[in-house]
Length: 257
Image (cartoon, rainbow, N blue to C red; front, side):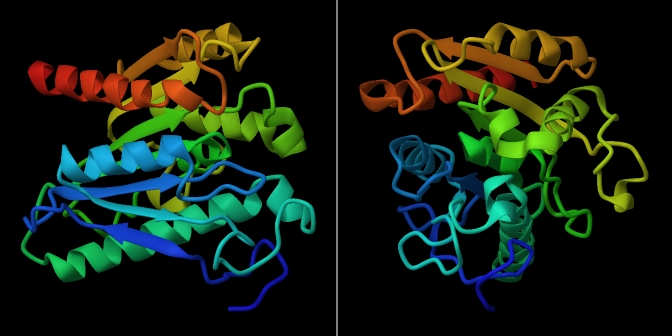
């Protein structure tokens, strides 16, 4: 795995965590980092990882961005493909493919495993542009957790790809409409267990436009959106609220099932 182009695979420093009590995981969660030096130790990622591992009994996979920690490759300042998000999306797809394969190998008899596709900041874009691998029917429909989706930075991140990034999330909610949906799905989005977005009050001037766009696409009735008062993009002392709101959401889904 060499360095260079955003389309090349590179070795990523990865953290794989199973439930601490030694019990077999009940599913798999991936959580992607933010941009400009994103790591698996950013508070929104770390707190969500611990919650999904301990409270939800999941195997949790996180990784450092290219060029960070022990991850190989360039960064946003050295590779245009990384700046516009290609590398992060490609890395998420690969991490999901490899993680699902490893999970099935480790727990070959497990069925209806939960699947969580999560991301913080630019990582929310990467997660929103990812779909489960159909060749692993052992997994139930995915839950999406999108933290601080970078609504206002999206044009700067993606330039000509911004519309596609937005449509990828809209398509999860309405079941169709994303031009980059993998061909294996034949134009129809896979079922989803739910899509959860959470944003800080002070990070998105145009957040109302984003929420309106998502609500207009929510024909599947799978969307929950939360704004946390007093929080900014870094979350700081408000980061525990992410876990609190995710827990409320998942508890409400369980009560409704």
